[in-house]
Image (cartoon, rainbow, N blue to C red; front, side, top):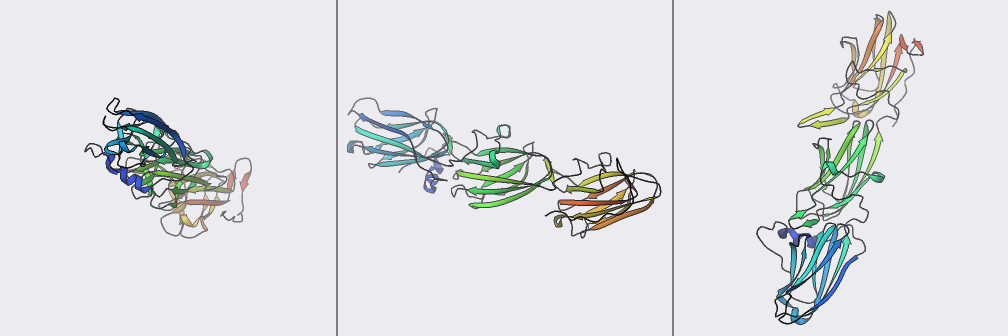
Length: 403
């Protein structure tokens, strides 16, 4: 098999490697065309051409059988794009001959060419092996404005297939929205022809900035990200033109807490969530956004409460192991000037912070994290006034966080 080696054709240089690698997510072959014809000795035309529609990304194999008078280094079968530009070809040095090419969904042509002194009958049969019969993507989803969705919590498609001469499908985008702090778990399954440290799956902000990424370096792997409420995108990108194939990315979302007491974002004193119960549930440390090189995380949670004259305010916090274990994260009680009246490091769970002999007024409980992430529960006690419930004057029993 010989390949078009025009210096300007970047795509031609990698086609042989693509074909040797084979298909991805193989399924039953689908016939795209069965064409027969005859060339007359010494008479025009010099080629016959047939339109071919490829319904989905996959490997197209064209098997050609010709009369012995057409077996020649000057007789060829080529696949051409919608503009009738040659994508790749093979010379008919023997019969039967096979041409295999990974094509994206689209319109193409198949051409058999010959000098006028080569003649005889021929037959060409084209079959498609789909890259991923379970694909959910709608092409083309090459940029963030055309991002696909995730029906059934599944991103599934194929990438790296040839659209036209010198043009590959190198990007796939999908979008998803979260309404609260969430652990997002990705299960990645990749065709062996796509597996590479040059195949990158990145999590991207609404501004199309990469927030974090992983490589599709194995046939299957998992990837976890912890995200604040918002809209995010995943981008699959191929940097190596020799890679192509099908993939599935199954997603599982697990909220940090089932019923949160906070309304994001409550990052400042002014945005503090008023106390509605003696028990607060929240989460902190989740990734929000990246703009340029600046990352934005949920680092502060504020809750406000009313304390009676001469009263006590006490807050016991129980928290996930992923949030504690050091002296970087704290819980504090603060006044209206945002001055800390007392605090505790979240070095182990539970921790309790207390302030006595307070003037009547509004005080704040602040949770701060510098590292880690996770859910927490705060049990509030003391001389605290809860709207609609009056004064809370006694301690309450601690409740353990759920798994």
